[in-house]
Figure 1: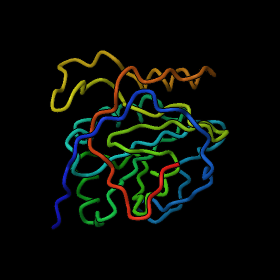
Figure 2: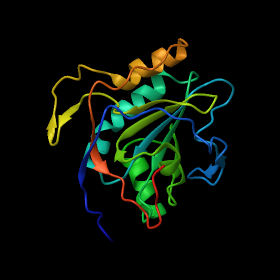
Figure 3: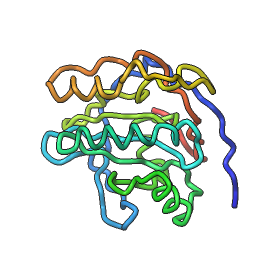
Figure 4: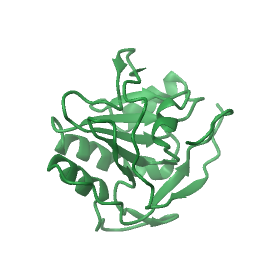
Length: 194
């Protein structure tokens, strides 16, 4: 089994929102059913969690991702986006079981179509896309990690929750209050950022 080299990364909190051209992009979920992760039903926002199965920071955030998906169920569409192109179905299924992720839609973005569409660079990174295709939020989930290898005992800033509440109230999502800390999403050959 090939082990991915984990490189910790920092995504600046000042990432600019933009419009997603590929809002209708469909990818199969882990059971082969087509999903449109960038476009939720009706006027709901679409929330994407970019993860890799072997990023320790992303794995530590899994319980909070599950809680957010549960707390905002019926108000937003949630998708876990696995970004490791070499991940096989057996490892993916094990990760889903180990972290109790069956209740959240998941896709394997093997060709980085979603990564490129929203310019995701780090795992875990959250992206909120409005029904009109505008990226309302991109950044950290909360401040569990303030610095590399330094988790907090108590989370004091819930950036994604605040952003979702704002969006659902028809308000602009505030920018994340800190950097997104985690593992770089490896670039595929031929990748060009927007």
